[in-house]
Image (cartoon, rainbow, N blue to C red):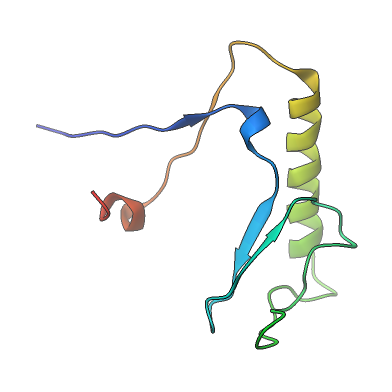
Length: 92
Protein backbone atom coordinates (compact mmCIF):
# COMPACT_ATOMS: atom_id res chain seq x y z
CA UNK A 1 0.00 0.00 0.00
CA UNK A 2 1.20 3.50 -0.81
CA UNK A 3 0.27 6.44 1.36
CA UNK A 4 0.17 9.76 -0.43
CA UNK A 5 -0.42 13.17 1.06
CA UNK A 6 -1.10 16.15 -1.20
CA UNK A 7 -1.27 19.83 -0.54
CA UNK A 8 -2.77 22.25 -3.03
CA UNK A 9 -2.43 26.00 -2.79
CA UNK A 10 -4.08 28.82 -4.63
CA UNK A 11 -1.86 31.33 -6.42
CA UNK A 12 -3.23 33.97 -4.08
CA UNK A 13 -1.69 32.06 -1.15
CA UNK A 14 1.84 32.81 -2.39
CA UNK A 15 2.63 36.17 -0.86
CA UNK A 16 6.41 36.29 -0.65
CA UNK A 17 9.58 34.34 -0.17
CA UNK A 18 11.19 33.18 3.05
CA UNK A 19 14.93 32.61 3.13
CA UNK A 20 16.54 30.50 5.85
CA UNK A 21 20.26 30.78 6.43
CA UNK A 22 22.00 27.42 6.13
CA UNK A 23 24.59 28.50 8.71
CA UNK A 24 22.68 30.16 11.59
CA UNK A 25 19.09 29.17 10.57
CA UNK A 26 17.70 32.69 10.90
CA UNK A 27 14.60 33.05 8.73
CA UNK A 28 13.79 36.20 6.82
CA UNK A 29 10.45 36.82 5.10
CA UNK A 30 10.33 39.07 2.06
CA UNK A 31 6.79 39.97 1.00
CA UNK A 32 8.10 41.37 -2.26
CA UNK A 33 10.13 39.62 -4.92
CA UNK A 34 11.67 42.96 -5.84
CA UNK A 35 15.42 42.64 -6.40
CA UNK A 36 15.97 45.79 -4.33
CA UNK A 37 14.42 44.14 -1.26
CA UNK A 38 15.66 40.54 -1.45
CA UNK A 39 18.71 39.80 0.67
CA UNK A 40 21.97 38.69 -0.92
CA UNK A 41 23.35 37.62 2.45
CA UNK A 42 22.09 36.70 5.91
CA UNK A 43 21.32 39.74 8.02
CA UNK A 44 22.52 37.89 11.13
CA UNK A 45 25.77 36.07 10.25
CA UNK A 46 26.50 37.50 6.77
CA UNK A 47 26.43 34.08 5.08
CA UNK A 48 26.12 34.74 1.33
CA UNK A 49 22.88 33.44 -0.21
CA UNK A 50 23.39 34.58 -3.76
CA UNK A 51 26.39 35.58 -5.83
CA UNK A 52 25.61 39.23 -6.67
CA UNK A 53 27.06 38.68 -10.14
CA UNK A 54 25.21 35.39 -10.72
CA UNK A 55 21.73 34.75 -12.06
CA UNK A 56 20.19 32.99 -9.03
CA UNK A 57 18.75 36.10 -7.39
CA UNK A 58 17.46 37.36 -10.74
CA UNK A 59 15.77 34.01 -11.41
CA UNK A 60 14.10 34.02 -7.97
CA UNK A 61 12.78 37.54 -8.60
CA UNK A 62 11.48 36.50 -12.03
CA UNK A 63 9.69 33.50 -10.51
CA UNK A 64 8.10 35.76 -7.92
CA UNK A 65 7.02 38.25 -10.56
CA UNK A 66 5.42 35.49 -12.65
CA UNK A 67 3.54 34.20 -9.59
CA UNK A 68 2.40 37.75 -8.84
CA UNK A 69 1.13 38.06 -12.43
CA UNK A 70 -0.83 34.82 -12.00
CA UNK A 71 -2.25 36.06 -8.69
CA UNK A 72 -3.42 39.24 -10.39
CA UNK A 73 -5.30 37.29 -13.05
CA UNK A 74 -7.58 35.74 -10.41
CA UNK A 75 -7.64 32.40 -12.25
CA UNK A 76 -10.42 30.06 -11.20
CA UNK A 77 -10.17 26.28 -11.19
CA UNK A 78 -6.38 26.15 -11.23
CA UNK A 79 -4.34 25.09 -8.23
CA UNK A 80 -0.62 24.66 -7.92
CA UNK A 81 0.72 21.35 -6.67
CA UNK A 82 4.28 21.36 -5.40
CA UNK A 83 5.99 18.01 -5.14
CA UNK A 84 8.48 17.84 -2.32
CA UNK A 85 11.25 15.38 -1.67
CA UNK A 86 11.95 12.81 1.00
CA UNK A 87 12.82 15.39 3.67
CA UNK A 88 9.17 16.44 3.92
CA UNK A 89 7.93 12.85 3.68
CA UNK A 90 9.95 12.03 6.81
CA UNK A 91 7.72 14.38 8.80
CA UNK A 92 4.73 12.03 8.54
